[in-house]
Length: 130
Image (tube, rainbow, N blue to C red; front, side, top):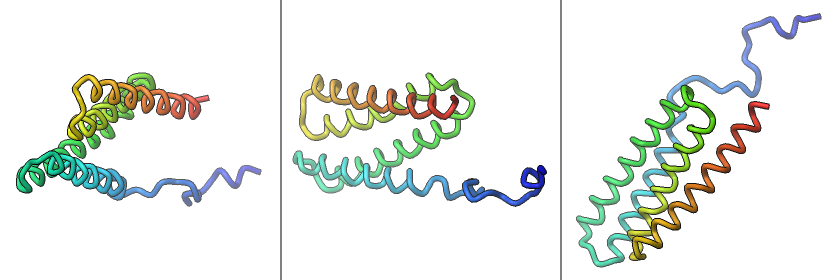
């Protein structure tokens, strides 16, 4: 019979509703900000400037990440993976540039990381559709 299809009980794999979906991104952005501040202070900047840079970079990354999560359901799979790759690539590129590398090296590593994230995200999302 079809008794299993009827009922309002959520299954074990259903995601709970609530505001808990931003805890992990907030923690990752906080670590990103701390690391960016550490890289800036390691290059000779003052502690205040390094802390301010870390706070700003973490907050900007969290704002961009939440914006991507908000518009993500309305986008095509290809555009979604490109957007996530661009966000990850720019984040990696900024960290490489803060480490004291040249602009060309930072751009190349950011581009490679962004392409890897875009390809991985596209593969993962396209695999769910089929």
